[in-house]
Amino acid sequence: LVGVNGAEIKYAILRFPGDQSGHMIELLHYLRPEGNKVVTRPCDVGHAHFSFRTDDCRGLYERLSANGVRFVNPPVAIAAGKNKGGYACYVRDPDDFILEFLQPPATSE
Image 1 (cartoon, rainbow, N blue to C red):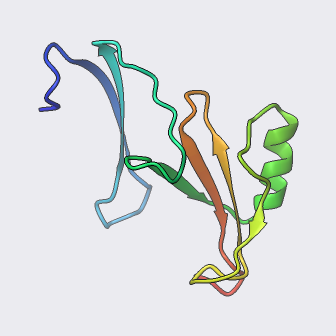
Image 2 (cartoon, rainbow, N blue to C red):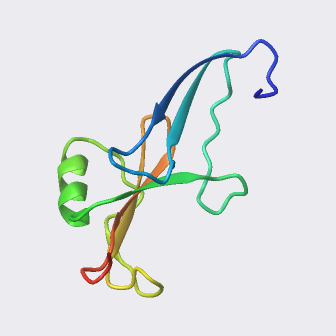
């Protein structure tokens, strides 16, 4: 399926409670073969990230950074687009994968 000979994979499929859309997140951990760590920048071809919605981007940033979480940037105000008036920041997980915390503007659904 994945095109990697001898692949041995642990996986988890996450669904949101009550969500009828069928959307899910599938997380894969390759046990074999061992992969190479690649650290990308948001502008690099092939880069990806997960975005998580929050109601308090600044508070989340303060709590997590106080506990040693490595942020790419503190929350910044979104100046254009459908999330204008909201806030967002990027953080790197322990594997250097980028996660985004997005606080939509107060008028957003």
